[in-house]
Amino acid sequence: MLVIMGKQLDLELHLRAMELKWVQLIQSNQLLLG
Image 1 (cartoon, one colour):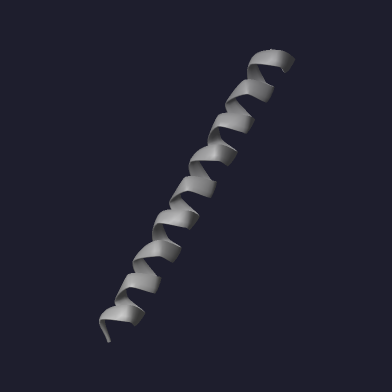
Image 2 (image 1 turned 30 degrees about the vertical axis):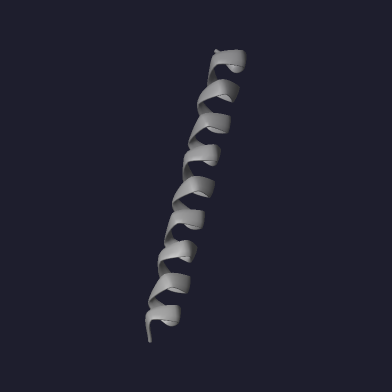
């Protein structure tokens, strides 16, 4: 059970990191376009 919880946490952190990367990409693109 701890293993499953650990994997879920890893997945959440991974998704959150990907989200942040996308936000940074979009923001930098807006700066370039703006």
